[in-house]
Image (cartoon, rainbow, N blue to C red; front, top):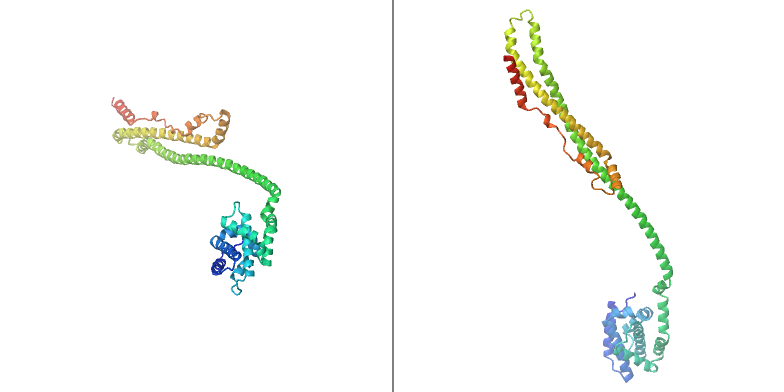
Length: 356
């Protein structure tokens, strides 16, 4: 949209010319009403420039610059011919405003329009031609200009634009469907990866626990070997002493009899702790076996859950056995663990049997 009346230059020109019109002394009633029309239009352009720019685009393009130049020309006198010419231009803008609005003109503008219609012959020849053009031909030219504008051309090409829009819509829908399909595939893949990583984490936890239990088993096995040596050590020591003193056995007889009781006590204590360690060793082996079972279940449970869900239609109990095994505690079977007093009682019985 071309802007004419909203510029600072145009506002200044309109204000100055309005003061010039106010200083004129009309010679008759025609000049008085003509000058009033000019002042009315110029004052309206000064007060509401955006409205005149918007509603008078045709004449703004055709005679807008010429109109401002006529008003700003201070070298020429405001003769009747010049004022008539300016009045005809004001009438063209006023008439286009009248054609552009939905409602009727205000009373002042309507009176000014009727004044021009009634007094066409009173204007100078050039101004008269402009007024007659505005009345007869300008509406048709305005309509022609509007009909050939880009906006109307767009309306004319509505069918083509509509078809193109429909094609674009179909292409976008196909593209969206393809993208949606890809997103769903990615979603399924990510879901599988998520489940897989969950079971991998669970498997890793059991694997770490298995390493701890393996170290514990190896330590127990080491002490079992040590206690196995300690069990036979007193007997071997006695045999070595007897072997070295076989020729003088009577000399060490009393010493052997005295040392037999501490040796037997030591053997009994070692055997007791050997039993305790042996039970712990079996318990740790049992726990390792249970951990290996859990690790094995973690490898196939994802497919098992999918199969179970499909078969049992989302049965809430489909994974109950798996969860009972996976999340249950490790069984140690501590019911068979010998108490400390069991060993003491065995030693007491041994001493009583020897004394008797």
